[in-house]
Image (cartoon, rainbow over all chains, first blue to last red; front, side, top):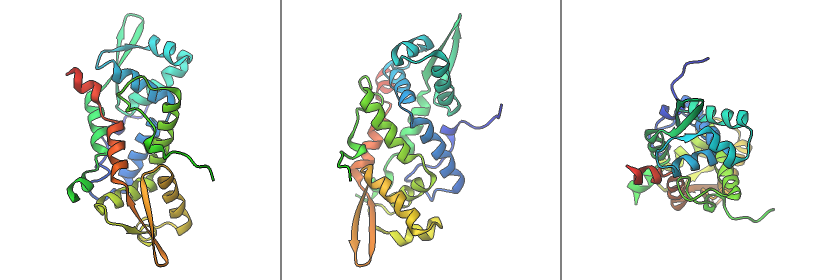
Length: 117
Length: 117
């Protein structure tokens, strides 16, 4: 398995200094991870859980998807640095990394426009 | 051409109430528009212009892409409701819609996590 910096830690904000080719590629990767209805629902469920860990079994129930599919989406989100995973007995539990969501929020902050107004 | 509400106006925030199927589909569409290195560079250029309109010719220069390719990407961003377009003589000028960037920023606000801490 490749060891790489989680995507969420990659880049200058969109409204920041000139976006380099490598930053643009990393941001593209991050938004690709976000650009999936099932992963968005997973994030929504986790954000609504307000930091409490959510069992993988809850996603299969709520999303009406098979566990391998849910696990695939959870892996995409984890590889991007958006989620933490914890084993409890036979089940895995997930939660959003608060610092990752803060980072995502900061990446799309319309700072330059705000400074101009 | 289909007439539809710009994608950016679609949805409850990611950390808001339970994400419906239709909201998840619209958010997926929005993040797909963002998930492209060239469109991210276009947004970066426009955000750095701090609300000043930028000529289509500047994108072709800075992105080293042919004008039809640039126009395709600009159309994707416009259809999502992220950009405004203005004709001046023979050239088209573009700027980011400040309310659209505010909306994007709000869509990924980690509000539920913030309330929990």
